[in-house]
Length: 259
Image 1 (cartoon, rainbow, N blue to C red):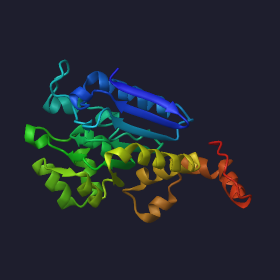
Image 2 (tube, helix red, strand yellow; image 1 turned 90 degrees about the vertical axis):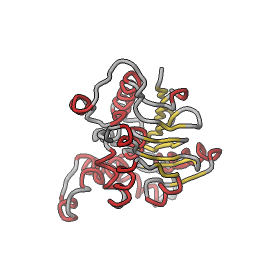
Image 3 (cartoon, rainbow, N blue to C red; image 1 turned 30 degrees about the horizontal axis):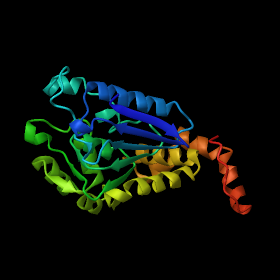
């Protein structure tokens, strides 16, 4: 299996397991990733996802251009692109729990697009990021061209998109694409700490926050405030919305029920 998937203590872990291929994604791997996202979406016990690649060289080197089988290119590829974007994640709208990218090395092409689709990014200090598609006669159609200019200043995004330039983890942090850069030996500890802090929060509140941010980013402030999103209503009407203040008053940890 080219994707490892597990759930423990409210944390789902998805690992692209093709280290000999720099964790590049071929068609079977893309199918397994889609299966993982659907499983997470159907499991109310999951409160946070950690996405990474096997080994210490690569998070994901994008599409496996050397893989046999599906060799669609150009307009044919665009017509058959997955609606969720690269790896079923970069443009996915149905995954409402937070996703942490554990970037343990190279994240280029589709790999970088998946990073752009994550909510929190923790990178090892040797990691690097880039969209080299223009160098091989392609374009980052699975989210890169759309997401990058919305996340960083346009001039920086255009510089990366039009040259295929790769940036370091430190540069990515300076651009605001990475939350924290740490030595490789501290990567697991740091990611686990972030996941634990999320699990300590009310799960419905976290889901509502993510949905509100994603669904209102292109709206005016007044339009965003007036939007009654299902996740927001569910959180406001939940038992957890009463449990939080009660636990605070009683000076104890809240016991979240997710309802």
